[in-house]
Amino acid sequence: MQRALLLSGGVDSSVALHLMMERGEAPDLFYIYIGANEAGYEDCPSEEDMEMVKWLAKHYGRPLEVVNLHREYWDYVVQYIIDTVREGRTPHPDMLCNRIIKFGYFNEYAGRDYDQIATGHYASKKVVGDKEFLATAVDPVKDQTDFLAQITYPQLLKAYFPLGELPKSEVRRIASMEHLVTAQRKDSQGICFLGKVDYNQFLERYLGTQKGEIIELETGKVVGEHRGYWFHTIGQRKGLGLSGGPWFVIRKDIEQNRLYVSRGYDPETQYGNVVEMPEMHWITLDPMEGEELEVTFKVRHTPDFTVGQLKRDAEGIYTLHSTELIQGIAPGQFCTIYDRSQQLCYGSGVIARGLRRE
Image (spheres, rainbow, N blue to C red):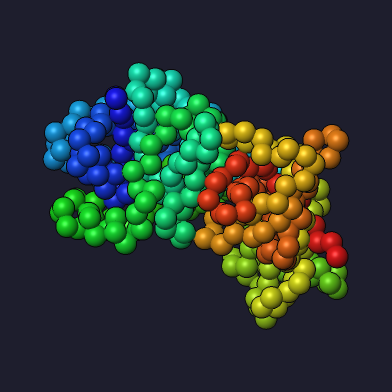
């Protein structure tokens, strides 16, 4: 069996390589180069990342190839971020990066001759009947199935997740024990292509600034001013610059460029129990035999699952009714659907809006 491994220069993919070598799987190594864009941002795949990857390839005696997917990443993932934020919604670039770049264009350009494409994701696979399903990792805090819930079934069949059965602490221990050069590297945070550029600086470069009012939802009173609705997301608490808080962003008026906020440590206005999605992406199969399905789900990256009932109307619109109130349902984000055992990841849908119903 021919295997490819996507190295990032981080500890997770490094330990994935070590485990594969221990198992005699000897993968060919690839590094996806995104590259600095024409606007002059520093490159996410930095020189330090490349040094780490080259060290690993030499250490384990495996061939390494750099695959340049700069244009594809900017055309699809970065443009998606800009368009989504401009529309007042919250993007989830990891979803598209995994589906379009890591398991998409990489496979088209370099991975199509391989039986398996391995990554350092914390996820696993499970066979049910004659079908493979994306399944949660052992470590609930690091589980990344909610980042993979837009991949296709052919992509899942080729995907290989060596870290699925390990907690993060064990991954760190292995890296230290084997004296891997990445053992002490911190986990990456934020959106990789920005390099050292702040996310709001990136948005300002593409969308500019436009002053608008911050209004208290309950009273209609203007309590402050913001620089543009695109710098803020539903459920946000920090970065509003308001005194007497905490304050939470509850709603955005795109046409009027207004933010509506509520004050308090746990205001009821930031919670909802209904999630509406115009369509669903199912990875393996459509699990809904009828119009309703008991599920667990996540509306953000968290180790916690929420129980709910997913319904589909005659027009194919999905409505998820939660058994408990959930904070900060942000349009544009993905709602990831799991089975009741919290093991199988069925797929995901883009949130159109969140509501609160009695």
